[in-house]
Image (cartoon, rainbow, N blue to C red; front, side, top):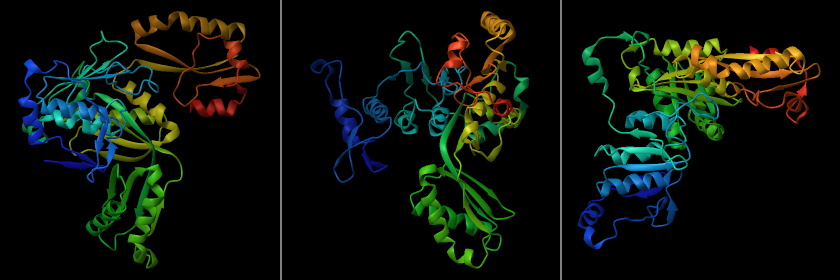
Length: 415
């Protein structure tokens, strides 16, 4: 059959293509076939592209029709990471993933993969390897197999706290989607929950809005959806148009759209099902990092839990969650006052000298979040990022990124 995805004409299950691939004679054909990826035609026959990760999608389609034994995607990273290493320096490569886990991670922002790229390989269980072209000796990540269905997981019926399984971590990765907005309809109890949900989601579909998350309060018939920030105003207009009569009669209290940048932070892993305490560990880690949660949603597959937080808190939330599931060592945040004096300089030298020992023996990481002198200070470029203490501190405090000393700003960062 054929499918149209985002206006692109895709024939990833075409019987003719499959037959042509099978009819190829290896004795009269070059052992290496070089084919273009990324390019395609629209349903009207107009040349177009498969958009982001289109080359990956092309590769998995070819793998399916040629019955390939494996697909290797060469990237510039050592496979799929537990988190974005630019935001979580302690992140590391995941050795293996199931197709479902990989698609969840990709959906919630993992840039190395695209959800559609996995689909052609699922039926034939073709393994997909993600490896680093600049580090070919590293094995990278292999993606293969399906997660157990909920009915299969629930057959056992035994719930166990995940911390009792020493050495077994229930999640595979933590990821985020930046620049999202919250669209909320409040107080439509007069209309009724079922009708509100139907009309709400219908208006989003009619307007072509990409709904990333949904949460509903049944008692008030209130609904909040998470949409891309660049579609926020369009979604707001569509919803106001749909409930125009109810708004005029006060049958709906309000329809609102957040005006500050928000982000989705999600934990993903097959091991979450039937393991208690996973959500509690996630939420507790965010609370300890002073990250406020605006929206919470759990996938029906029980393979992911997602929250929405302020955009400025994203890096801090990712690092806190990563640490909570022992995917990285415990990190101690340090602010050094008097960094150019004798005591401050001695402390920085000691931290640099003991860094590896603390990590190896105590599983403790030290993050220098800010350094200040009597007049100047320098902080991490964004919340949750550490300063390099191997650089010359005097030079750092004379640089462009240094600011005048502000104790209130330093205190706010620590809070």
